Length: 395
Image 1 (cartoon, helix red, strand yellow):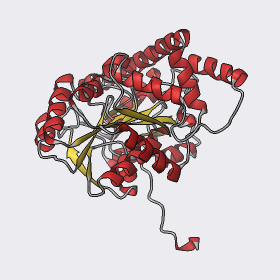
Image 2 (cartoon, rainbow, N blue to C red):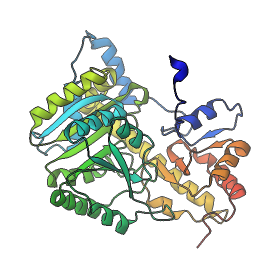
Image 3 (cartoon, rainbow, N blue to C red):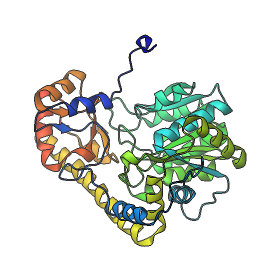
Image 4 (tube, rainbow, N blue to C red):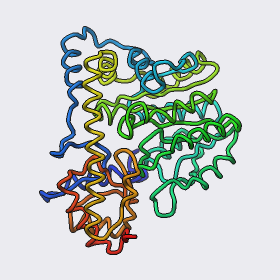
């Protein structure tokens, strides 16, 4: 049977991570896969997460099934974290999912069940798994313009010219904050304009919230979604707890839907979840629920999250300064938000960085600044200058 299988499609991120694992050089530097690392290069277990996990191990009395909705306390807490404490939630349905990727697939199946001929529009560029997940659900995927030609900022005119053409059969997938892979976010005024267009034209916004708190803070990073919530009768959203809770391997996420028939939507999501995974894993969700509902744990989590955000920002400044020493102007990186930015590095340059300098980045030049130790910024800048002379010339 299996010798007739077609070859697997190579994942642009995981394949680089695998190559890094097989590299025996002691000075190798992984700037590819999107995980946060501290100044020592470790991905830590956050203090509040560890405290909650210890309490959970001591206090939990059963591992019985929870049902397709998952952890209800988690769902309520995540909904509030996204929408704010005072926002009405009666038209929202929240279902815990196996990570945000599981949420993406669940909502893709919901779109396909509701409107099988819909087109899902994703940014160019976007998260590498957006298109494959939507396509796996049988949906048509197309790209909308997002960045300017130099990959430095939003091409606002091209973006909104495209959005103005969307209608009832369109779903617009937008990054809620900390755009992956570029770090280029919509501004509040952009969100206001987008909300007005969605309300008038009838396309459905689909907001991917994977990095709340890594950009400008928990409240600011949810601002765009909250603007859309106030203006739109229909919304889709997916949520990840991998980054800002450090729960990567726990696969803790949620799918959220706003609509006029929440009961119908809820039961359809349950049906679709039953076909896929029946119910999500509870451990990570229970940890998050405990943190968000315990005042002391939440305060400790927010303090540590703020320190992580500041470390990423400090790394941005350090890299910009290091590149400047080699006559490269990258000050636009300071306007970006979150873990990622993009450098205009060609495929041969990326190969040379990998082969000769043991520095790993993914195709397109995405750099994970949250994985770059500050004391390695000069080494990275020197390697880029050596293998891509004339890049980002000072102006």
